[in-house]
Image (cartoon, rainbow, N blue to C red; front, side, top):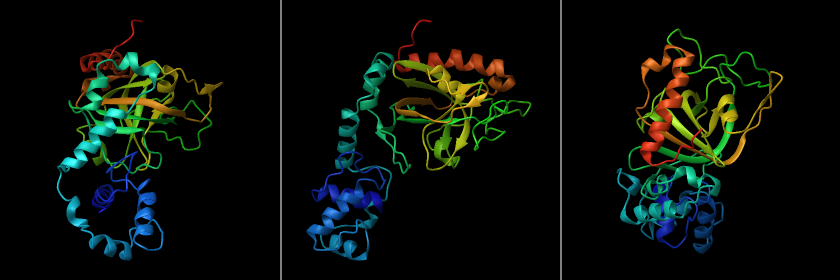
Length: 285
């Protein structure tokens, strides 16, 4: 119903300039209050029964969100939002021709607590998001200082040992497992991660909370220029918004999990190849 309500608000002249019809609730509350004020209703910001009744009199249909293809006006709104998106200027040289693909992408519905600046599927199926990055220390038993640390990771080597967050650059995607699966993404897939002109390559090794998008291992932070370990103790704080992650679906290979060395080699060889094939630029070491 949320998407139908957002479409109705936009059509009635109550803009949602930041996220449009993305299925999330953030700026929709303010627009709902504006509609309620015009209709002479209490300005709760909630789509309650009196609000729905007033909206139905103006043509609101809760069932209009059915179907997978967005209407023409929504496609236009998505294109507009993608066109105005601007990555951190320091990352532009690395992105190269990927910038053109962003404007041709498709926005994805999101209901995360800290919403990414953008979450989209590129024309080739790659998942692109610009977000903050929280720290994950799972699998790194040698580290202390993170009360939420777990001994295991969702992805494991053939011998069932976890992926060590202190030695392997990895990224985390939200549960349930169906969330990444809808994009064709599975454990072991690779990604390019960019922050303020630095680039690192990483593997999808863990699932995280359903409400969080943007989380990476200690080693991923390190490769992006953000050290979080001192004398074996973690300084548990994240990175500012502006971290760009581009995930390559179907890029996993079971052979990568033979050992840590094999996995690191795969990340550092296939990762750059996939990014360059997409149109990005990898600095010469």
